Length: 424
Image: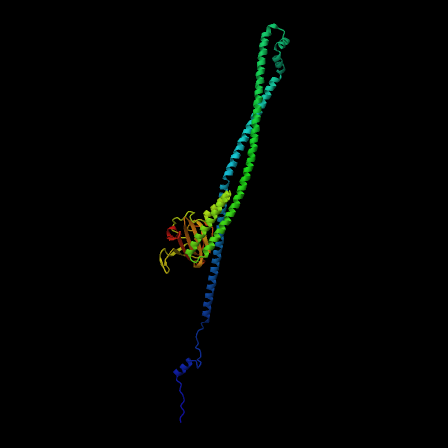
């Protein structure tokens, strides 16, 4: 029986080789490994450069934030010192007026005493001159006054000059008497001047004692005002902490604002009752300090909002406008697409009711503008303010994240949400 030998054609052999059963020598081709290695190195270098750039940018942003916080702190300290100075001035106005009146009285008395002292010196000099002029003729004048006839006969024995001598004696007597009366009058004036001078010196001494007492009162009032101010600031800080705590516990933004209002009203009522109790205890200055702090907790105080200049609180483009249709319904605010590390500024002057992270809003600020208006700003990267802080319009509130982000801005009037655009 003939043996059949299998014949393998080229195509069959090729198929088997492709299936991996028979190894096929690799064809000579150019290596791709050097190209892949160069691309990988370039990619890694690009990544390193990007990371270094981001790190440098973050460092610069941190440095800017540190400087900004230092400026905010300095502004807060200056505002606090100015507030204390106004408070001291209000408390010490009456004492200062009394002290000024007393010092004016002292100046007038000093001038009057100088005038009377000069008058006394001139009166004494005039009295001394009159006494000197009478001293030489006083013995003869006294003898002539008591024994005119005998004295004249003893001095002159000529009878024909008797009438002339008697007339001379009479005239001399009248002159001497008049000068003696003038001398007596000068002495009376001098005594009166000395009496007035003594009274003025006594009044001056009393005025100086009053001046010292008023200065002590003024100093005590300032010390009391400082203590009351510090107590009031501590009380307000505690109140702000309670408000922030109540806000952050809320589940939604509406709940947060409602909790904020309720907590403010409760704390304000408590402070006002404390102020009334202090007033009943005749602690007027402390009562006024507590009452002023209670007013600062009211959303009705402050300037309110004003029409803006067409600039938003952050540089960027508006991506969601007021009442624009969104997945959750009409937009209740305006959303900005902001550049990286861009500054966020206050759209109004007022008090920061809340500053911190809140639910899915990220870092959020609730800014009380007064007159029952509040701005809500969320999505801020880094905050530059804290709860309870006072800020001016366009003051720094913080910065966006290093890579930018979206800032949501909402405006409320009481519980109503209104279009914020005219006020940005």
